[in-house]
Amino acid sequence: MSASVVRIAAIQATPVILDAEATVSKALHLLGEAAGEGVKLAVFPETFIPLYPSGAWAHAAVLFGGFDQMWSRLWANSVDVPGPHIDLFIKACAEHGIYCVLGVNERESARPGSLYNTMVLLGPEGLLWKHRKLMPTMHERLFHGVGYGQDLNVIETPIGRVGGLICWENRMPLARYEIYRQGVQIWAAPTADDDDGWISTMSHIAIESGAFVVSAPQYIPRSAFPDDFPVQLPDDGKALGRGGAAIFEPVQGRAIAGPLYDQEGIVTADVDLGRCMTAKRLFDVVGHYSREDVLRAPLGGT
Image (cartoon, rainbow, N blue to C red):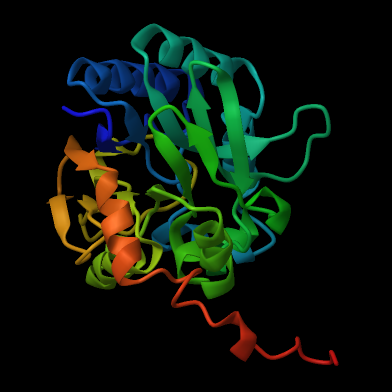
């Protein structure tokens, strides 16, 4: 492969539900497996550690009673950033020469209370970036605090300029535009969305950003939940997240790997970052196609 070609991956896996230590151990194994296949950037799903609070069961948390045990166990198995769990991933990145985007439920042990839906970029150098989801979606607001826009960053790494957004943040035009302005080349999109419309969103962002997009969804079969899971689950037997991991190229928005459904797996693609420049020659949303001058002043402004 040429110097501009990088192997990237979406890791579609099931967490060991509400068990941070076991989920971290599984994720580290998968990271090593990806590195063994020559992957230089691996993206894990949204809030992979220790579980995504799915609307299939989490909506009941709007009631004042009944979720105390769930909340306590979720907090106990969440991740401090920085913290000891993150240190294990940094060590693994250094050992394998790989970069990793990881979705976690983030806590602040020094000030116990709120949780955040957070994505981190880790590499051999350490913790490179932390971003908290700007606006938890619907039922997620029962679990996660809101993030803040100051952490919308693109990070220069030896394998390219890495940025991205979490799940339905990818529907937020202004958030996307901030990432576009920073020249992203590899767009990480940890998610729990397994609908067909999500694939269309990822394809559009690849074209609009001129970047390769890595979509890493949840795969959560009903059988993954422990017998002592503290919340009633739907009894239809269906998976609570069917996956759909895929990688998209920037010129036509085509899926060049995946989507993968209904199983765990690592979806990989060798991407030529030179294609980002080809895409930008055709359509540069923050350059020759930007026209920021047509934007009006904010509501109430002058």
